Image (cartoon, rainbow, N blue to C red; front, side, top):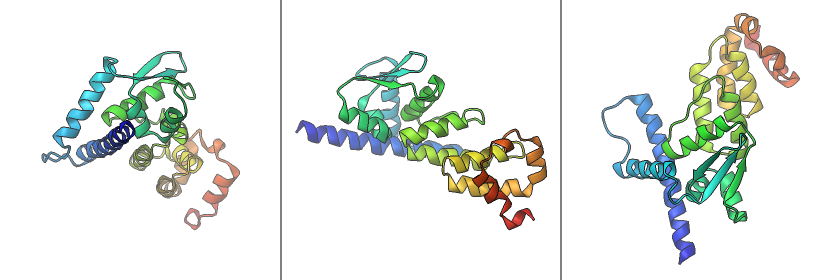
Length: 212
């Protein structure tokens, strides 16, 4: 019975948090007056965030690179990330080292787990993409691709193209490459990332007929 209850709660939180995150994205993009987030889901997320802030019923402590900590709920971490789910299944330890990236990135992602909000900038994009290779949060991958498609410009197109190829984001790669080819001279002349492109990146770029 205990196993069944745990499994049910895990599935419930995973489903509701995922729906909540997507609902927030939809609201921010459509600016509609029609409510799109079910009140029950919103109340659940608010309650979980309050419990985390007050360190109530938090069974797991994340130890960050600067030795600071974040108290979290086991079910939230395991529902949102396959990486944390595997660790929590295999280990009875209530402390998890999350020192594989800077502390601000982990705090940003944990905030997303609980609220559906994440701060993405040109400056932190690389770290967010890199840590998601470990955490494997699929809906965050969609967020990052959307950010790159919406924010690409002359100054960022080379770096975004490089990151899209590095972290296997085909939709973002196609969009950034199209922009880069359209403004190639301007983009290359003002970018510090062109020298970071790999041989494979350059071959893919120069082999495109649109550059000629």
